[in-house]
Amino acid sequence: MSILETTIINLKAKGYRITRQREAIIGLVLHSKAPLSVKIIRKMLAEKQIKSDKATVYRNLELLTSENIINNISKDDPISKFESSKDHHHHLICTNCNRVEHIETETIEAEIRKQEKVLSGKYKFTFTGHSLNLYGHCGKCRN
Ligand SMILES: [Zn+2]
Ligand SMILES: [Zn+2]
Ligand SMILES: [Zn+2]
Image 1 (cartoon, rainbow, N blue to C red):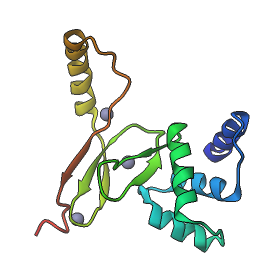
Image 2 (spheres, rainbow, N blue to C red):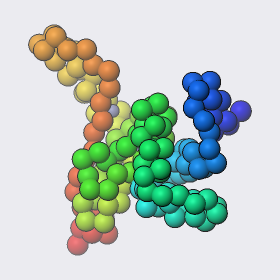
Image 3 (cartoon, helix red, strand yellow):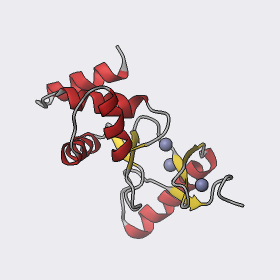
């Protein structure tokens, strides 16, 4: 079974209605290599002859985010971008052209785990996850 099929079966089991638009959005975000903005998602829906308005697309994305199927990787940025939450990783985000690069971060993960141990003792805090974006200028915008 594909990840799209599994996701839809899980949502149905939870009592969610699967509209054509909802199914299409899940497919688009889960299969995209690059994180997608609402604007791009609406454009891709239009290409599939699926009508959408901003509010419904947002509602769908919020639902999928709360179900932990996708992540909004740029909550603090002016343009939200969504991607599959399947593989945990971090991002380089260009503040000039908004380009997003996924990065391998084994060293960062090891360091964060180490820090979590220290911090959980110090602040009596239980860690459930983290997100990390690094901002700057990409190769194209650098010059
Ligand atoms: Zn750039
Ligand atoms: Zn990513
Ligand atoms: Zn991480």
